[in-house]
Length: 254
Ligand SMILES: Nc1ncnc2c1ncn2[C@@H]1O[C@H](COP(=O)(O)OP(=O)(O)OP(=O)(O)O)[C@@H](O)[C@H]1O
Ligand SMILES: [Mg+2]
Image (cartoon, rainbow, N blue to C red; front, side, top):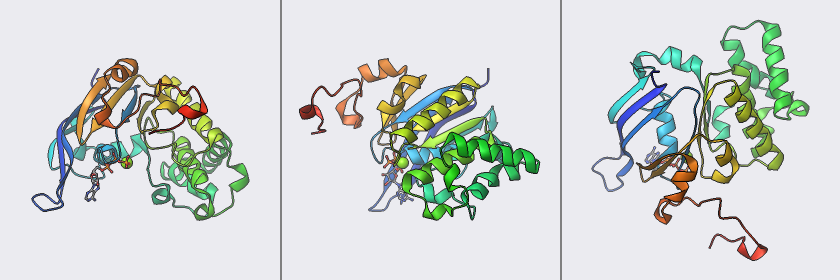
């Protein structure tokens, strides 16, 4: 079957030639298959968010080819917008409604669904993320973790076929992590594609089909999670979460 996304040799450089030049992506090639749960990990600054923005058509690469179901991404932006749900690393960047419920309703309304259908989806999403009691509050007043829950609720209500989540666990407490994991499990069961970018590997590793390690804009590893972890190098800045903490004294990163 045709890959969902097929990207080859993506290059993205900021301030090229200048003193502050950053090569955020340095020839990234990747095929993402429909129904896959792909985990992309890497240290801060390794290029995860830039890769997501390019995949979503929100940023142009300097070089490289991007295909969505075999067609150039820039020719199918309408399809892509309907198909793709995004959870941004910065939860504030994606709030649009005056109230939590309106915010969740925004996407489904844009899909042209009936009022009753929109309301049902909003209700289900509020319940799934434990936000019912915040329904009529302004999103800007939510806590960091509640904002993250709201972003996930919005994507859930849209019923997108593919979801890209950039650090979805940031700010979430343990119940919040469990709720998001439960949603990911359901999405997987429904055959949806989930692309998750995170350095908090321990939270999702067990669910993932595939693990890609990005390091300074280069894909260093791509394969089954256990095999990738076996080959992990310290230089990538990603810790193997299987190395469990035995005692309180072990609970240190240094
Ligand atoms: N607008 C920009 N201008 C200049 N440099 C940028 C810009 N956006 C990103 N960068 C640089 O590109 C590199 C990749 O950034 P990116 O945000 O993709 O990292 P990341 O892997 O998502 O990191 P994190 O784990 O901190 O979220 C970094 O070195 C970053 O400083
Ligand atoms: Mg990032």
